[in-house]
Length: 251
Image (tube, rainbow, N blue to C red; front, top):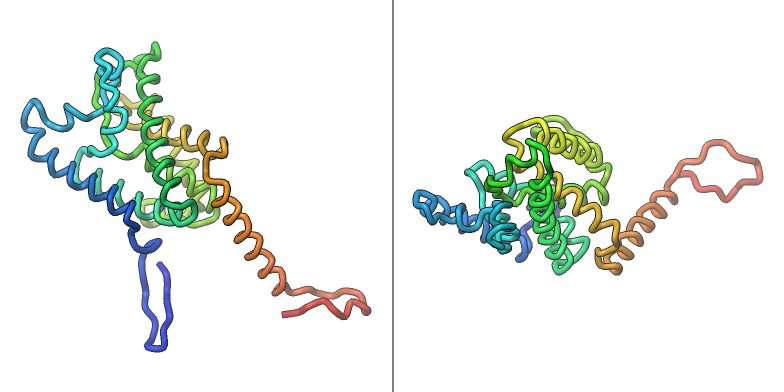
């Protein structure tokens, strides 16, 4: 929630800001595909069957396009609603920081990378992994979890309202969501998507640590952070001091 002022009064705005053309395109594509799912999934050739990620098909039939197309499919209204809301909330500020080109690269690298790890995970000789070998994975959650991790790394102290009630610093929120995804992928028989969530977190971490984010954007971020800290230091309050310490500022 932000407050803005003008000569004519003040106004309140919710969220990180307006949608960029890139986010509008991604969200628009997801919404269009979702409505196409509603009309086609009643048939055997529905979009979920054609474009959803099924690890057995990727390996056995070489349907590699499923590694990317699954990101635009969703399992219900609340599924797409919360994913697109998270994309707007966390993606807007990251795109503003990185630039559109590198934001899109990060989004699709984490989404596709999460799918690749899901396929590899399904090959493990454990029951909780083998159950998803013939299952269909859909949703943008792999990429969304990647954005969440990036947000937690760049803005660790920003409060995120868990369940819209409890304010938690972003870094702890990411830890909680990662722990839940890890536990669910092992303990629950319905934990298919949770393996993809965990994959999105891992790919995003490796992507950021490898320095693939545009270096100039990183330099600008560090410069702005230094400038803010320098401005803050000028307004510090100093208590006491030596008698000849006459040039210390007190504000």
